[in-house]
Structure formats: C-alpha cells, structure tokens
Length: 279
Image (cartoon, one colour):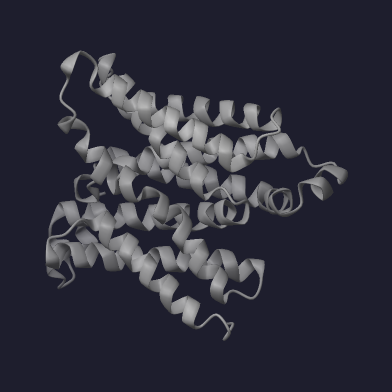
C-alpha cells in the first residue's frame, strides 16, 4: 500500500492526495473486473433477480453476525449467503416451479428474516444503514486485500470454467449431453456470486448492488459482436463507470455507489442507441 500511496502523491491530482481516495480507487480497480465478469454470466444465465436475492441474504447474515456478537459480521454474511445460494440451487434442481418464482420466495424470505433479526428486542435499524447505502470511501486496506484474493480466485475459476458456464447457461441440455456436470457448475457459480455480493455490499450498498451486477453486461451486450468482446467490454464499462463515479462523488459530494450505478445506466443508454453499429 505504501508504494500505491507514493505513486499518487507524486502526481498533481488533488483528489488522490487523500489516503481514503487512494483506497477507494484501488478498490474500484479490483471490483470492476469482478462485476464485469460476473455480470456477463448473470445476464446470460438470466439470474439478475437472483443476485438481488443474494444481497438480501447477505444483509440477513450481517444482522445475525451482529446479534451473535461476531467482531466482523461480514464473514457471517459470507457463510450465510453461500448456504443460501446452495439451498436455492438444491431446491431449484428438485422443483418444477419457475426460477423467478423460487427467487421471489427466497428473496422475500431473506428480507423478512433480515429485518426480523435486525429489529429483534427493539434494536435500532440505523446501524445497518451503511450496508443499505454503502460507502466505498471508507474501505480499509484489509478489505482491499480480501477483494484482491477474491478477484484472483474468480479469474482462476473463469479461466477453467467460463466455456462450461456459458454453455450451461445457454443450453443446459446440450451441456449435459457433452458430459458437463450442469448442476455442479450452476452451484459453483451461485456460490461465487454469493461471495462477491457479500464482500462488496458495505462498499456499494445493498440498494444498488444488483445494478452493478447487471448493467455492465447488459450494456456490453448491445455492442459486442462475439463472446470475447462481450466480456472485455463489460469489464471496460465497469471500469469507466467506477472511476467516473468516484470522481463525481468527490467533486459533488454524492454517494459513490449511486454515481457508479448512474454511470453504468448512461453507458447502457448510449450502447443501446449504438446497438446497430457493432464494434
């Protein structure tokens, strides 16, 4: 971190003379590839509402962690979200209900349970506001280290499993006929989403987290000609919106997470207008 601080101290950029802004920029450079890559598979697999449900389960895990007196409740949230994702995969594979119906069941249950636990015994809900709104400007070096580890693991997972995941999402029957363990692939991916969602919830906020997991790929899909471009443009859009949102939050004093989300929405609008002019 000292080298990272020294690098920006040597440049005449006012906003990056503050350590908290340097931390936030580094966090964005780590989160953008995470959101960009995960977004492509979430959109391709039509799991947009599932990522939102995972955000609700992460909040429930945080509330349980606080009630149990865990010093770092975010790790309780990671565990709860992974269990939530695995349970959803189990029920989905053994039910004839539509996926969106099951997502609605799990999402509403997670929200209700989270609010119930958070307000149990007349406890104040205000201490959980930071998880609803998020504050990337308060990210710590320890959290940045955690994001770096998760990014590395996701990249390894992506290199090994991206083709299988894509085929599983587009045509599960064909994937199964080619010997791909469809259920295992879907379960592994849902668990990966759970970890990413949970570790970023305090930085970007539950209320807009789902937009960051959907908009990069949705915008990239408008202009990409092939799968490689789809992934690269999604990551690029996430980086542009992330850095632009951070700059906007510094000069306008607004929420960085909301600014990033609006930047992605703008990129989607522009890419939609250019959808007939493929790259």
